[in-house]
Image (cartoon, rainbow, N blue to C red):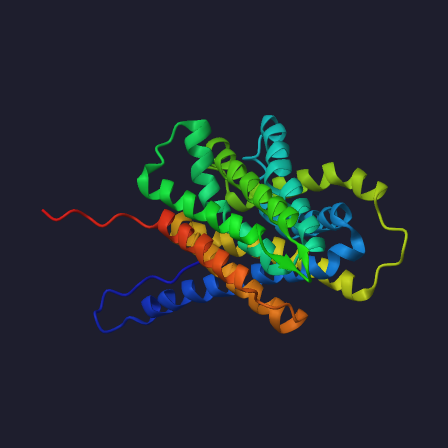
Length: 304
């Protein structure tokens, strides 16, 4: 519930509060989502990608389940096959790809490739739905792909990170497909409820594979804590904050968080894991984030 804004010109406290709230939530969400790559790096080697992702989906869906329960009358039975498909494309498979990449390369690699999702959303809309892409976004895509090539050319501890970059880029492309499916099939439905349904669907589909691939060795407490934080905080709580932002300021402005996530991810990995920021990451991150900013910006109005 938001307070009404007073009409008196000298009483602007609610407006100031609203002005501070959005930047704080955007920054907080970027910090939270930035830690997800840190938690993946810690937990993926112990759990393996599939068991970790199943646990992440279960915990994330549990946090968001009240939103689904509140909107249960709007989620009609015939929607569930589509929700399950989006759960696979937009959660289960990309989460697994990023978890696999976290075993192969530093946390920053996954965070940088993840930011391509915004551009891939525009590319998928152009390729499959006939939406106009425009010259600005075409240039942005070229610059972004150049950044991916630069990133793939780098090494970690002397080993190539190309396969990790390929996995993260594929995951980002799947996010682009999922975003378009959500926009076209679930517009008008409560967004947090859709997120809960897709996460829950993905969890149900992943559980048999997780049971079959569950590690035989005992899993340490550090990995368990990282997995719990990944599911509860980064996925469940993070999605709730993100959809709250979408409802208040709209999806384009909420997407600004995409620019900030890699910065936080690289900082957390450097501070807490001792992972270095390599020149390749710096150059590729600048190219990719710059391309995302270019693709999201509006052209300047023409002078009359």
